[in-house]
Length: 489
Figure 1 (tube, rainbow, N blue to C red):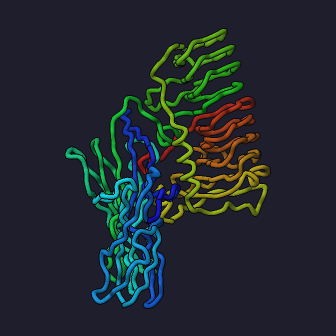
Figure 2: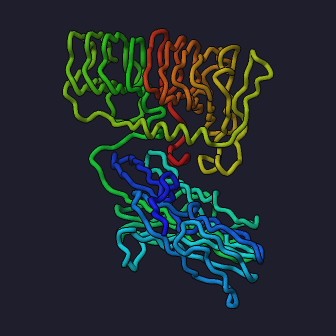
Figure 3: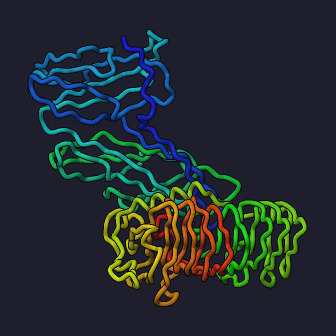
């Protein structure tokens, strides 16, 4: 009998923690869990042995020592095929007649030899004929105004290569809750929820021969919380600067959030706040203001959780010991950045180094459709941004996302064509840890791992970064023209 301390790292129950924020500043936090109990189907030939490997469809979560027991759920009526060892994790089976076999692996606690009910179970299909397809779910979410989650079933597959049809369903929901699928027959679907509680969603796929997969499940729990976490959709165009640390100063025309104490910072803040009705302070600091000289726009409020120490705060109103600062989740910004980087797209036109062209007509790929039908995805590198001039073509699109690879470098292209494109552009520096900004960036900046230095000439849009050393130019705020819900935020 095998002593099974089951394999770590082969998780079929990935758990993710995601936060939503609504217009009413209501936070819904959920735990999402995608899982299935069916391993990869195995193609077999009569007289040939196959190895049953359940690890593609199952893994124990806690390292509990387990004992195995293999049984037949189904096999052809005249078959006498048996397992080489019913207590081995990966036994062999020799198929003796044509047809479909379904083997079940039950796993029990090793220290409970009399147990009848297994702790875990999974099945393996072996067949000489057409195999049953496999449904798989990937869940994505980005926080935003009443944002749905995005469920992705495109990793579902059929070993025989048959085309698949999809069906999303609700297995369980709270008595006061409801679920709406944007398209219950698409491999991608937005899912919206109304009401707190536990939800279980499922996906089945069917091949062209009519075989229907076992369901894959996605479980989540929605619950209330005390504070609203502002996601990417809430932040773009509403805040001008969101950073964990700020050094130096200069000018931020719109709203700023700094996640740590301001030390030796001299600059102007909230000098040109947008008239968008959002109820946020012009400057929010999660810490003290020390040895600094802060000039606020007329009538602007600055909130700090700490105190002012040897610092001047001029023109506006300073509130010390504040408890109602906006809340941002940088882990979620990192997840959003990675999600954007995962979308397929096109390269920029770099044929003329003096006029590099980014953007164009909307991309119709399904991954982009899940993000926003009128979204253009462009992929480039930090190396491409160091010299020359550039423009971003936003004609016919709502948003142009420019994914930029590379960890260190500089942005030193001259902006061409004015500022009209800026509100629709997101520069996603998804790998950057250090970036020197030596020219105007037309568009919003998402760089959740990076320290941004300089801003010679300034920027036109929201800047989200781990740290900012603002020295040479103003940050100007630009309203993002796309409703966050359109993009799944």
